[in-house]
Each structure stands twice: as C-alpha cells, then as structure tokens.
Image 1 (cartoon, rainbow, N blue to C red):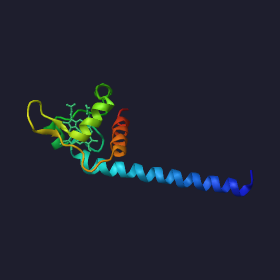
Image 2: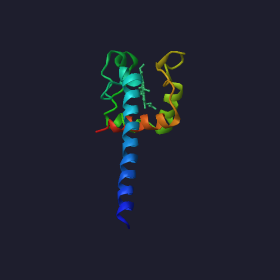
Image 3: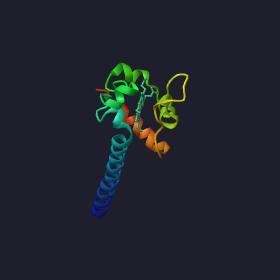
Image 4: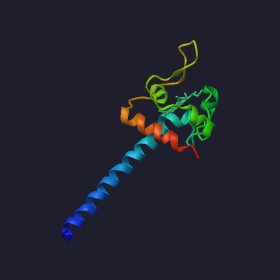
Length: 113
Ligand code: HEC
C-alpha cells in the first residue's frame, strides 16, 4: 500500500468517527430536552415530573428486563396512556425519526449499570 493511501484511510476514518460522535451529541440533546424532565439526566426518574408520572428507575436491571424494544418504539411514537383514560403518562416524542428512536432506546439501555 502506498503511503498516500494509508494517510487517506486514516483521515477518512477520523471523519467517520467524528460524524458518529456528533450524532451521539444530538441524542444527548434530545434526551435533555424531551426526556430528562421525567426520566432525569441519569435515567433514575428522580425528578418532580418523573415522580408525578410514575417513571421507573432505568438504571435498575429488573426494569430494563421488562422493557421490550418493540414496545419501547411504540411508547416513543404513541406515548404511554394512563390505563382506561386518554391522559398521557408519557407523551410521544416530538419530531423523532425512526433512527432517533432507535438511538434513544440504545441510550436508555446504557443507563443499566
Ligand atoms: C411526562 C413524563 C415523561 C417524559 C417526558 C418521558 N417519559 Fe418515558 N416514561 C414515562 C413513564 C411514566 C413511563 C412508564 C413507566 C412504567 O410504568 O413502566 C415511561 C417509560 C419509558 C420507556 C419504557 C417503555 C416500555 O416499553 O416499558 C422508555 C424506553 C422511555 N420511557 C423513554 C423515554 C424517552 C426516550 C423520552 C424522551 C423522548 C421519554 N421517555 C420521555 C414518563 C415520561
């Protein structure tokens, strides 16, 4: 391999890695804006709104085990309603793409230990 090829590969790799971290920052931003009010920055749900809504501790392995990915996608698209009422315990996400939803669920999974 020529040296110029090697240098090009390294630069391309850095650009791709950089794009990845920019995306991760977006998810942090969405979490802070749309989710942390209830779930808390740390996922523990130890906030005023979280206690009112009845959020569970997302750092708890048992809580994580009960969350199924497809059900979580539905929760983010449609929200979670109080049983038998039209009142939302968790509002649907605002302006989220399928990619955002996938990344947010991956973010939620990271709270587990
Ligand atoms: C108004 C408060 C509130 C906000 C804001 C909120 N949630 Fe929730 N979330 C809840 C409640 C309440 C539950 C249900 C807890 C339970 O009973 O299992 C929940 C459950 C979840 C679950 C588990 C769903 C399942 O299938 O069991 C995920 C994942 C989740 N939230 C992610 C998010 C994300 C991502 C955001 C931001 C886009 C968000 N939440 C914003 C209140 C909120």
